[in-house]
Length: 256
Image 1: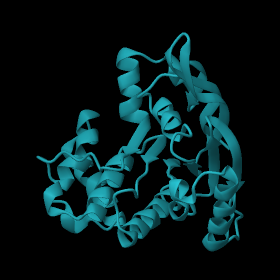
Image 2 (image 1 turned 180 degrees about the vertical axis):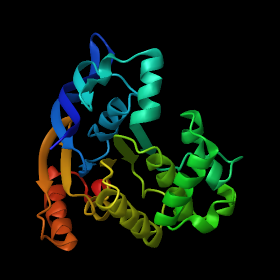
Image 3 (image 1 turned 90 degrees about the horizontal axis):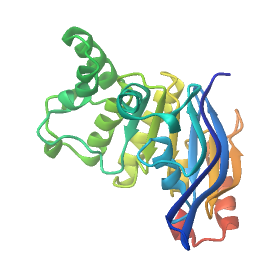
């Protein structure tokens, strides 16, 4: 199986000598092509710091992160910008859509930056919009859409360039339960049918239960991980997640 993401002994410190805060300590794991992996942990566990290091928003203090075999901790300048543009797709909790652009224009923007021709852009945007059930909002602006529609537009934008890795940070955090369920079913479609490789940070057990594997982080270290069996129901996996959450020792409300 082709390894898309490899995290090797990553450490991240904040502060200066004498007042160091250790956010991540000796974190190592890999994600293979076509996997849907969740990262869970209580507030302050280091899960968002880890995502920020993988997305190159933040830099590691020690260790290495490889995406498609390339050490991204060494990238700078134009090479770093090209990596973000061509290899990563981002889905944020607050959507991060551009208010002055329609849904179509928001999705198309990344393709335009890559220099794709308008005919190719139209073909790709219309295809992904149809697959995610947002064809009817393509000509609407963000203020004219519901939270669920905005997040599905953001998901379409993240995958339309066919990135090596899709990073999702609390993607259901701003959605009601119905919109969250629809979005997660879309994620399952992207993963199963389009073979998108997804790494998702969440504090919510219901959201996490849609993934095929969960990595739990506690105090900056990997605590344990769970894999969902091929024939295992989502409800059974959800119950296992809840069991680990209780072992983590945090308040359930912090994690679920």
